[in-house]
Length: 246
Image (spheres, one colour):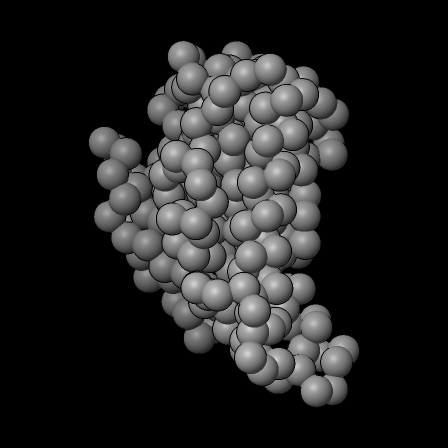
């Protein structure tokens, strides 16, 4: 058995994977809760008592990873973080590795194709674009996250209520709430289309577009370009790294 984990700023996804690299259990926690004092007393992590060969994580929250690693180490489980692994034979990173979040490298490992070029758009706490040309990671773009921006606007503007974003059919809103939703929905569609267009112009290449993250479903049918959604892309990237190094 293998334990794979994606520790993000908002959520932490932990998966138990069998020796055939099939996900047999998946649990999503709040990363904020993981950092609380009593989290592991309330959550026994009973599934980690199974015989595990190793645990591999990508993490952008060092404190949460340190806490999980401590718990697993007490159970004699070897724990690795993706950025501490040698990726050179699997993914050729053309930028400073220190400056890239390990979740973005995991996404690149999940999307990497020896024949096709990919742009991964991840709708997380930030909206990230990562550019992969065959086995080469060229870098990417980091834009404000949809929910983070929406919540910040609500907190800073007294007359704008808290709301969840959903698909909007018309651009012109008839009230404040609909006007805000239109601005975010159509604004992010414009951002996505323009950034992808500029990446294509800069590289002179065509790309397969892969969407991942919690809000990927909102934009799948609205961005006027062929794309696919893979909500487990980050975990699949960790899985691919294991497959190549077992």
